[in-house]
Length: 260
Ligand SMILES: [Ca+2]
Image 1 (spheres, rainbow, N blue to C red):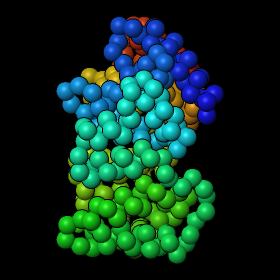
Image 2 (image 1 turned 135 degrees about the horizontal axis):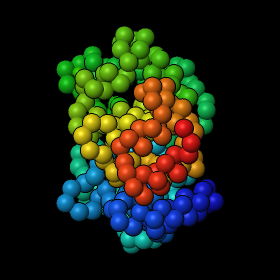
Image 3 (image 1 turned 180 degrees about the vertical axis):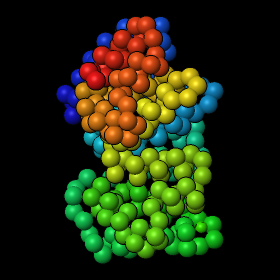
Image 4 (image 1 turned 90 degrees about the vertical axis):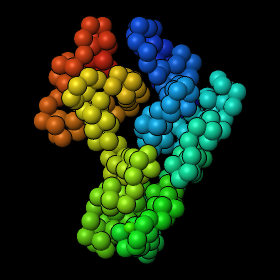
């Protein structure tokens, strides 16, 4: 882990140096993560999307590293910063993710998976209103393999995909963070491919999202992200970036992307 943080920091320094004219969430000592966190809780508005992307996709070890770097650089915990700038159930979910308490084993408890699926169904589709705590309990704590089983069971019980139910039952940032967790559990590369696509398609480009993902995943799973991107959008990530950016900025992003 330490090695990975160091590598990511090194890469960040490099990129920061070269894209100095672009405001981007890359710090010179904190790596992408720490600074991404800062950007998310400072200033006029909370950049919830940034917090969601990072906290839903990182491993416990990575989240612990983010917390340590944040504390060192800013003299307070990221949990305090997040708590001060968000509220309600969304805050509870973020704080829960920040504690890095997810089971990272691969044991699937079949009976528990059925129960979890039932609990979520009864907390959402089967009742008036929504009991969001049940979603939090299952989605923020269980291991990935177990959750994939829960999603299967949920489909059997409700006749719906869990993503569809989250969209129907929950709204705003809370909907976004639960959807991000589910998508990351199903496939992180697909999650990032979608985020990249959305950061570029249509009018304008959300540079902060584009840069953050390209820098933070370049040495981790860019090959998988590119493959998913091609599969999902029938175009290469490379060609998409090329068509949507220009100048040195484009050159650096394409370098991070690698070949077609
Ligand atoms: Ca309901």
